[in-house]
Length: 344
Image (tube, rainbow, N blue to C red):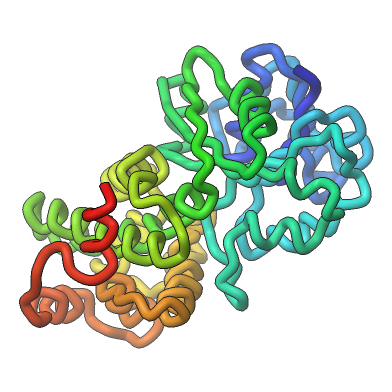
């Protein structure tokens, strides 16, 4: 199957490196500095991001890009979305037609509101654009590191490339499906983080399961509206990258976005919460970028709008819920979602 390079020592990147090396693959985990690489190799675990999960024999860290990439058949970009463009530039001189590129980030670029499958091609040779894929789904990294069964979906424009990535990523405990809908798979994974922030706020206020179920359902409607407007297949949002990822991220105590929303509801400031976290809650910047995208497509996103006001305008969380509940009454399947449902 060839070797794998994981770019980024994030929790998700490290987890994927552990998972793939457990099934016998040789994995190079690229670290930003020689000091970090040496520490990871010495301690044989990423104590900061994935404590308690030792590196299998086939996983080694390196700070040398050429060492990580030269023999790699698959290059996994596991960096935060706001750093994706920089890292795409770093690897471009090391790519060739034999290397598949897989983005596992779930965010939009803040300034451009572009998806990662739009950002990466702008920074690498056009000859290799067909080798780009994305992975999404209900993938809480700590559960996967524990070896619990999980599922995911890979999307890309070239069916043969997607099939190769599917085979490389799949294992007896990690079932991987394929989907040609790159837009939908990415936006499902991205936009659910905004709803997870809101779900955390609901949990923090102790509003109960009825409230949360309603929030998730209406949140899925927002995600679908924007996704369909951007060209996605509405069925994608009923799948792993849509409903599946939404349920996991909005329900689990392992979700960083849910945690951040919950802490905001308790009265802590955004700055205080983010400073205390070891990982990035992608929903914070995604909310800004998603509203830009929604404006471009003239799509209404009331939950995202209220999350934005809580994050950046000091809106009280309880008041945000009151305003959502007091909106004008309407048909459940109005606007773009109505058109999507009629196509099913």
